[in-house]
Length: 147
Image 1 (tube, rainbow, N blue to C red):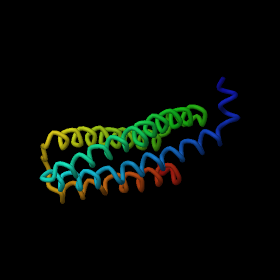
Image 2: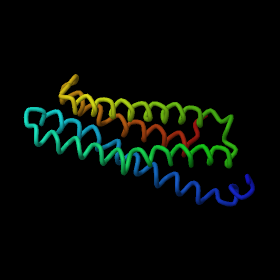
Image 3: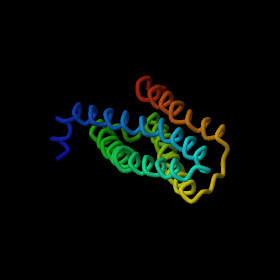
């Protein structure tokens, strides 16, 4: 089976990149949704619309994309014989952190659905920048392979 995957390396790589783009798009927009949702807490109809939008974002983009990113990423690491490379472990640590970040966003979304706003809109806007910083570091690690 590994031989078949080795022949498919470029296809796996393309799929991984595609799903990373989808996942990052979801992670870039989700905190903004939460800002708008939190600002709408005093307006029940508008808040309900944000709950629905957040659920669709999770169901259609975030959940399928994170699974595909992990699947294709682990296959690439195996087929590309990258296990043991320090840059890969650094990348995986950041991807674990982004996965946890997504989990936290989902939890905060569910808290907002109950009317519980724990953070300021400013802090949520700052959180919106975290995925972008992670992408910069990940691309550097994968392309440059500094260690």
